Figure 1: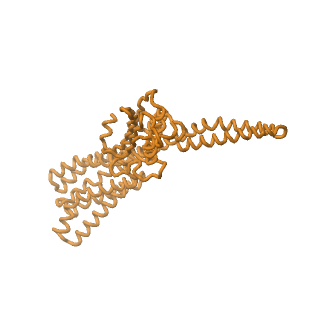
Figure 2 (figure 1 turned 45 degrees about the vertical axis):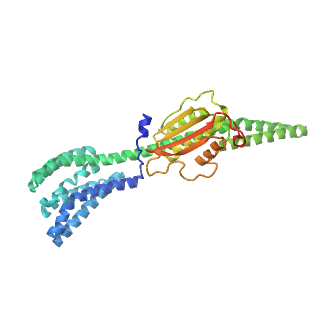
Figure 3 (figure 1 turned 180 degrees about the horizontal axis):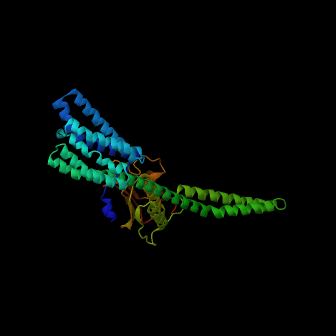
Length: 397
């Protein structure tokens, strides 16, 4: 299932206003195209200034009204006055063909209001009005002397246009709701990660700070009667405080002893909370201790990048060993066309993917990150199964 999803390009949902503007523009382009034969005839064949002015003004008014009503309803600004706008649009579209001549292309106007019926009116009213329009439009077309094929086209085109308008607005609203839901899931996942960090901080510092407080109470108790005991307690307090500061620095920098199994558990839980399909692979209990720290960092940073810098829907984690190296590969589908993939922007040393590359290299391993095609972004890291020797191998294991 995940492999099949990896071959699909994931679309990027743009801003709501821009998305709605594109829908309105494409709709008006289609409507204008249906009137091009009539406009061409009036401007270049008949060439009567009065008729040309009327044709251009009427076309502009129709498109402006149609676009305005569609835009407002896409943006959920529906109002009862829109029904008046739809009625006025219908009067113009049905009144212009007998004036200008339905046989030269103005008969196409009879179908224009149908696209807004289900957009402006409530669903039940829209169904009833669509049924009436489906009957009246062909009948009116016959009275105007339209060709039989055009009348037949209107018979089927009116309900199709009404349904198309409804589906367009419905799909737009669904996409925006999904967009908001995805953002909320991402915020929730980040919140879960913050809670995990807070729990780690509490676990590390809780005991130390409590011990410091107890030592301070003891020192206060012996302040007047045993200065030597007070000095001893103060020395212990200083040592505990320094140790606590070191623990905080290790947590913040990520240098605290890390378990790859724990990091992958946290990664899969956070991504699943953000509605991203992810399954943690099984980790051998005989995994060398020195690989946990660097590979655990890779898993942590990859999870952060997936949440913050991509629109991924799945994440595939693979861990395996070859002859002399332990590999961790994390792929996701959040690097679609035209998008900046996670890590593509410059990172300052010691942070992000650039910092990971430096640390993996210092451990004698390999690190790669980048898009690999079909909207997939891949992070791969390998560290030696045996601890590195020499300067590059120094550090915590």
